[in-house]
Length: 606
Ligand code: AMP
Image (cartoon, rainbow, N blue to C red; front, side):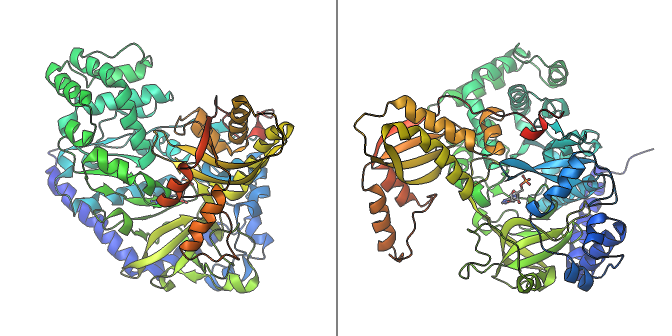
């Protein structure tokens, strides 16, 4: 049968998607009402709902009256039962197909988010909205390819035999990704085999090789998070001559041993000495400014998330891309995918995400930073009855107000606090658009790690024990996520109180660094060991009196003397400069901390 001209199809497809967005945002409240009633109707027999007194009712009022607003810790016993093999309908009537391992942690281990098969379809739907939106602003993208660096991570099995892995690993391994029909919008330079290669070196190498040898066809480049994209550039800096050689000769070097990767790459790679010369000339220049546009001259934008903690990478990305637009297309999590950016070419500081009302049932807990109740810097605690009643519906949020996101998902989370703080920036029809403000409690983050103040404090306590034999202690400390190195790394500034007379040898401080790392959560340690996305932790010893100077500085900027507390993390450049100007010694962690896939309590059970 003759095919309809592709452009026509694409035009129709895009139109349909944009109409879908119009429709669900215009009818946001009705959609939300039916999403909740569908979730509750599907799960009438679920133990969790019955436990809270819901017996088949599907209306919002009863649901909100009976169901508490919860955090992960509240459902951890239920999650553990499922992980240990209880297949009864505890949270969801449909079988839990796998656990998605969130980058949020509980007790130092990744949180396990239950998911069901059909959620893959919902995630896929959100992805399908991105390019039709983008094509309104950048026409002609269908004529080129995307060089997207995509990686899978290791997975584990719970004692009950359920697979636990990150959401993207789950997606890339699903048929939605692997068996996707030809579509110009999911036409990537990376063959599936290179994405699905479990060895991160071979995966990165082969994806860059395929991206380079198709360089003229590349119209957009990207990775999920900015940190990952910068890591790829650093990889290129280290390995370009090997890559260049492969392009010159049309062969792949022997380090790439995965046969499926070799075969897939060989279908694309042809000897191209001219291109090899161009790459060699560009990469051997002393400055790498604008390397993206030099090597991929038709690139129109860089698709990476630079909202939230990733904003620390904007200057580096601007440098490498010569100021190409940095495009944040979506907002998602392991719990659920939430929304899309309908104005993708806006400045990173102005990005807002429109929550798609079909994804889950959304509620919003007003955040009032001054009353301490929902202060993003405080550890979440159970809400009292009055606070539970303060939650508002998707269509009732107020412009300019900040809220904590609470979701009820098809996969068995009910009134679950995601931990993100969002600010209403505007509306698309009836659906609000949110700036991402912050993740609650997170003080340090380099890649997908999210370290909170309590974890940092515990790690500090453990590390400081090495100083006890020297009659020394840490009198003040703060921390900084240093992203000027690639990969970035955690820096701890320590001011010491020294009572003993024996000098402290450097190896003791190095032990302190390692103990800090060993004490941090599993996502951090995975970043250090497996993903190599975080560099060795550094301790910088500062002169006596530095933290007094820090306080003087804060007070000069208007902080109250009575309420001043040493910040446990610093970001403001002048403060970092002040600290750095008083550093007397520096130490790095001498090796990687221990890390194994899965939760530590599963090791003897599997
Ligand atoms: P995970 O559950 O590990 O996939 O992490 C999800 C979390 O990553 C979210 O709850 C946010 O805190 C953060 N995140 C995801 N998308 C964005 C985005 N577009 N901008 C800022 N932060 C994001």
